[in-house]
Image (cartoon, rainbow, N blue to C red; front, side):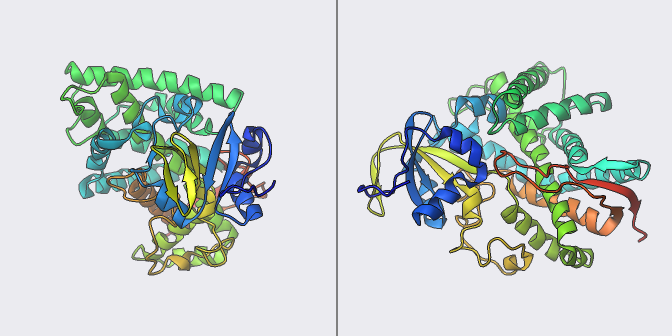
Length: 422
């Protein structure tokens, strides 16, 4: 590495795509530390890219006058995780119009319904776990959240289908940052899932199926584009999947939260005593900050501009370090320590805590389902701490930061589950 004579430090070498796969979550973070700069240049997939880290970097990155999402997500990610031409790759008025569709699903009443569905599923799963010798929590969370998400979205899911649909949603999520077999599984899973959901959209439109108007299935099926025409059936399916898939992905956060309960027993004791949900919120936020989820996100420069004396050229790829920003030493005291209390009375910037993106949740590119994530985590982690007891056998709870997305290697195994006596 070297610092060039140009304004932005620049990494030596023809291309660093393999290093990105090797370093994973730490790719930007390590280089920013080496350069002692929250901005540097590198080369990825044969083109120059600018990497940003920190609050100031996030603020400029989420300025929609300066950046666009079109063309930023690689096709390999669109064909597995997001779906092609979905909301994540939209800009301007079209993005705002589509974002409003997603935000309309997040009313207080609908979130309350989601909470009730989740609690009901927890009761059923606890009853099942009490009869089993060993539970792999991550696998159980993905299955539970597939059922929760489909019921909440109005998507019919028979019990005999749960394993198949769970695996497909899980494979789509697991394909992010993957090559080879994992990527191929993700692509196949997306094709199957899009075909399934598209058929449901068409059934709604032909009045063979009548979901409640408040559900995501109904809203996606009858959503009209800016020109007044119905959204294409396949695109409606892709966006409906973008409601269900991220909900299933919360299983990773919950699994890491369970690891946190195990590794920090004093925090578990505090959560056990939490009666009003105050500490569960603090604990949930620290899990989202501390453990790996999204490594980075990308955009392209909309038009030439200068920021902090740095030159950004039109269409340049820019990556924002999510993992590193959430652990930035200038933003977080003792960032490598697990401290839920740091969020007590926290009034930080929406650009310094960005586990699911930054900025305005209603207008910008912050994840529309962030509140869903928080609620599902609070309910689930409280269930683990307050409503059941279990043993944690010896296992490998380490996680590989070069693997995107990451998960504890053992996927968190528990035994001897028993319901707490109230």
